[in-house]
Image 1 (cartoon, one colour):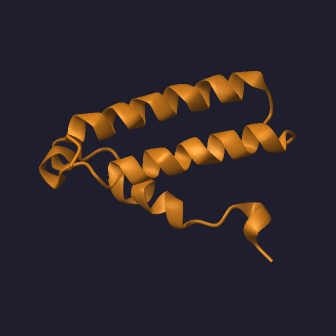
Image 2 (cartoon, helix red, strand yellow; image 1 turned 180 degrees about the horizontal axis):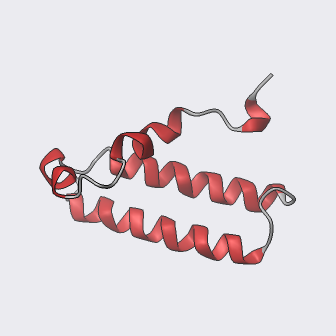
Image 3 (cartoon, rainbow, N blue to C red; image 1 turned 180 degrees about the vertical axis):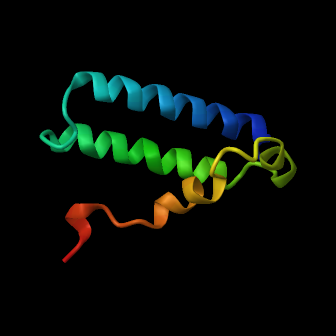
Length: 80
């Protein structure tokens, strides 16, 4: 099992990648950028689920539940 620190690193890396993706253009107009950002949001969401609960309680101003639940939201192009 990975250390929670590895998952925290995944979160930070995903945020940094999303920032770089946004700098490249408008996600609403570029499907490739949209997909790249979405993938990193999913990675971020999954990594938050692996953090220990006692650590999350130390940072209770962060909406952990909303972030970890993101992966259950359908992308607009997945809606029929």
